[in-house]
Amino acid sequence: MCGRFTLRTPADAFAKYFLAGTVDVCIPSLKPRFNIAPTQMIAAVRWSQDNQPEFCELRWGLIPSWAKDKKIANALINARGESLGEKPAFRGAFKRRRCAILADGFYEWRRDGKRKRPSYIFAKGHQPFCFAGLWEHWESPQETIESATIVTTAANEFLKDLHDRMPVILPAAALRTWLEPTTDPDSLHDLIRSAPPEFLDRYEVCSDVNSPRTDQSNLIEPLPHDLFGE
Image (cartoon, rainbow, N blue to C red):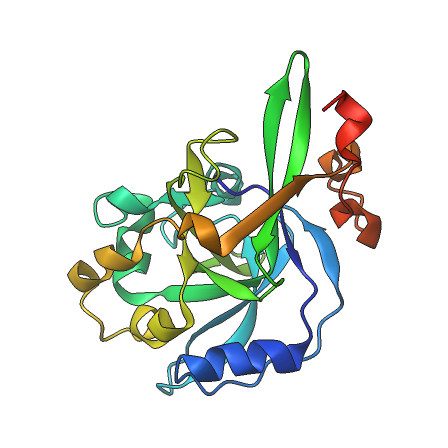
């Protein structure tokens, strides 16, 4: 799964990443974030009604357009990639409302007795990347919310000791295919796969990241290996 992630890459680096996927989009400068949590706003790129890629900010936790209560978002921060075309909550968005969620790392936890030890996972060389996402537009008499979920798949060999799921990371070359609404969803299943193990690196970090109220640069600093007698 993916329950927390980071976004601290400068806008110009992300612009190059999207251009590598033939997606010409303006990425604004964003405040660095080190502990993005569900219900918070996240940065993404989607296809606009004018048939152009556009930057947008979406609330993390999908609210289907037909939902009667926005609280459903708490259960829809992730979407299993294997069943996107079958689940009512994701089926429509998978066909027409796909997005790429900007990121440069994410967290996962390993249970150690009664406590959980967090690890920070990132691309080697600290390259930026995007998660495959879906977005929705929801309205009530009181408010309008545009929201998103992160697509997940089976964890690769590098991460499966932490969790059996991981977010789908889109290669730059696949961005346009994923984003364009005219793409046949049946052709996207080859993109819903785990990143190659050699693409990623990881290390343990301090437990301060456990609180979604904490958002500071020291959260991604590695812990000394001998802290746990290793």
